Length: 239
Image (cartoon, rainbow, N blue to C red; front, side, top):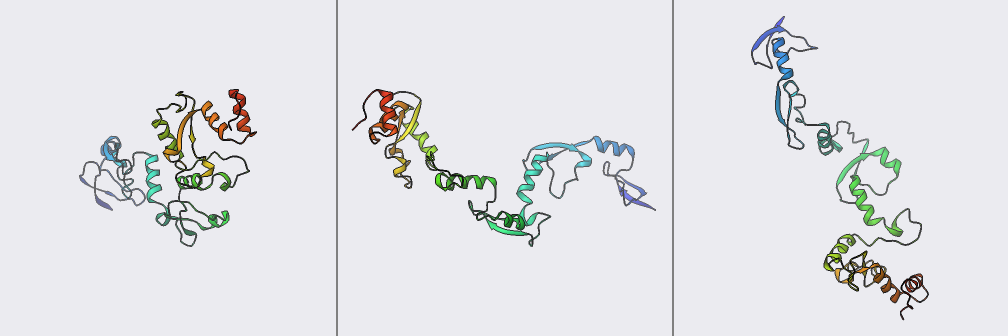
């Protein structure tokens, strides 16, 4: 039995036998071929970039919108189809958690979470890395095996940059232009817990030789720093 249909290419009505397994879309081969070559302009719902697609592909993703590429489709899925919105989500198989870094709520597979026996949970790799940089340094790091820690706190990089700019990238003792280090007037170890440890007025720019000389004058007699500086500069330790 023939059924009246509308051609998706030219818009004209036509009568043809309707097949459940393969519905008719076009009134003729000419319209079918034209639909496969005609291109339309669409806007990607993720990056908002305009792109072209064959007309017959236009309706493939009407539920979520058109995407210009698989990376954009993947990025959109990562933002919108996660946790309770994911098709595979099952509240009996997932546990609701709060990120230890940013506090955001998220879901995780219950079996995986219990298997790892984690005390802390993070919503993303970025949050885990940020937390580790702040909390798991020196003796607080699970891999700590003793030795000297060169960590100078979360504000150190910016404070060091500002000190170098203030001192015009020159040693304040001899005006040398390098190699340069930024020195703590009050040793960092003595005030590591204080927010003033990396304060700009506690920092000065020095060349390596002047930096070693300053440590030589404050190091205990006979210490490795005192002996190394005295040998390098040919002088005696400061008293």
